[in-house]
Length: 115
Image (cartoon, rainbow, N blue to C red):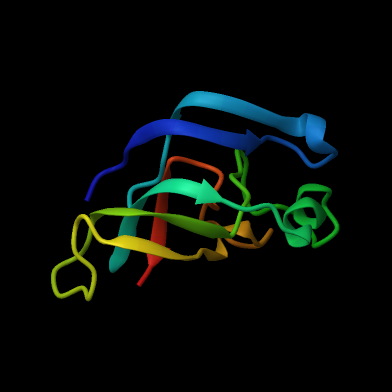
């Protein structure tokens, strides 16, 4: 499994909505062992997203950070033995929205999700 490039809304510091940057060539992390890779077609904004963005849940683990927890999309890569297969339509969440997480969230075209 390799990293992919695509569009994402990222932050490089905490603050208001003005800290978002739209990046068209963001290099997403390579999936971790056991991850399902999803091409994200829909994401939501929840109160926790703006609380984390403003720095109220402690320091952000790393920048640039992609926030967002909820997603819906299509599986583009799945590990051997996964209950998911390429082409499956899925919805779910990622722990990438949490400030302490080194994972990225769902405000990007590609999301690596724990199965």
